[in-house]
Figure 1 (cartoon, helix red, strand yellow):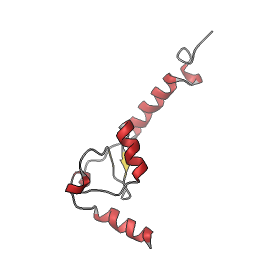
Figure 2 (tube, helix red, strand yellow):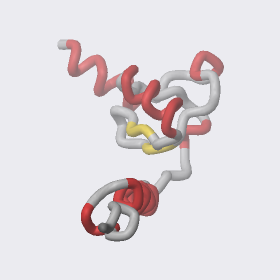
Figure 3 (tube, helix red, strand yellow):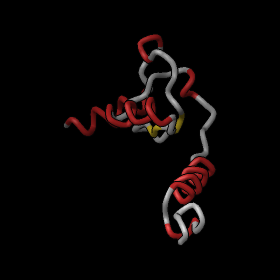
Figure 4 (spheres, one colour):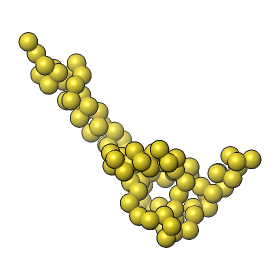
Length: 88
């Protein structure tokens, strides 16, 4: 009898590990102003990132792993403009 670990193409932990590695390779973290600004991100995505370490994507498109206090930085002008246009 085989287990999912014996047959990684049939699911299980090995498949999850492989999918996570693939996602991390695809998640090209962008250098840039995310160090200078606080960005708008959905609250549930910030929580998910805190738990999993997965990068988040801001309204402006920046991808990074949050780790700094956003209160210490000015708001990203692009995120602010997008947010205000969404709010009508």
